[in-house]
Length: 219
Image 1 (spheres, helix red, strand yellow):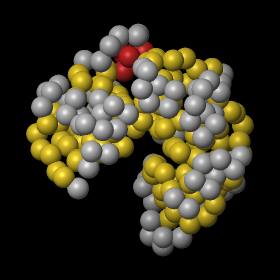
Image 2 (cartoon, helix red, strand yellow):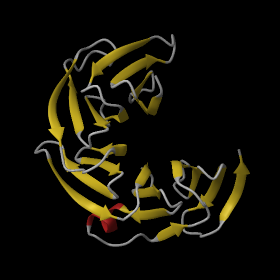
Image 3 (spheres, one colour):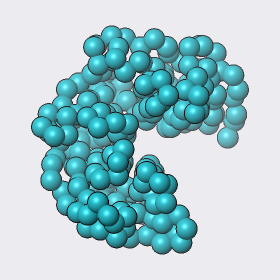
Image 4 (cartoon, helix red, strand yellow):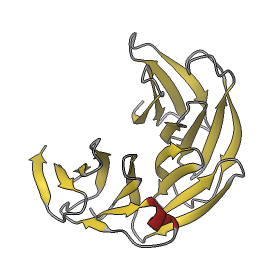
């Protein structure tokens, strides 16, 4: 079955991915052996992500919900210990397209309903920090500068400082060089450069605050 997204355990010894068959799996990097962590409700899991300390997993499903799973033992690696579902976050009206969990108390999700939501995992409450008429697809977090980039189905990429986004302010940068839906976004370690892939069959590299692409690769 096709797999979606990859999230890394904090020491990068194991990776996590969701699947269209409704499962999330862990794979060891050294042996390439994998194990099924849990099975959801049978619907595709479009995003799975570890919390920063590796003690929790958030998994997003086609029905627009986010399930939070807790690792039963802090001493075991993900593939060794059992995981228990303890919270389901609801609020999106359509499928969730991506998740980022860059800090405790800062879980973000994007959705086909055109929103980005911020979740308080402890209380299970969420609020919409951005809403658009088009699908919000891939989102990417820059830990260096606390930036969030979001790609849309119309090819637009918006970039916010997190404090501005949380306060309801608009993006400080927009990139309009793609002609079709954004499929993936990644940040360089310096937080000054980003790269994006699109259904227009290009990968583009750009400076955060510049409207022009530095490089365009056709694929």
